[in-house]
Image (cartoon, rainbow, N blue to C red):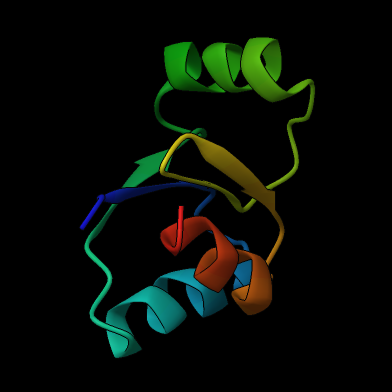
Length: 77
């Protein structure tokens, strides 16, 4: 199973919802905090054109915001 990358900030409630969802569904993930990692923030904007969080990458697909249905779709490939 692919490891999800979740781009977050420290104060984002939807980021917490996303990481909790991944945890509850046993989906491996790593978090990248764009507040503390400015390079990651820059790469995120260059890649997706958006700075809002959470942004989650699974199997090469980007999910903007907390969207469990899109997470499941991305996991299917």
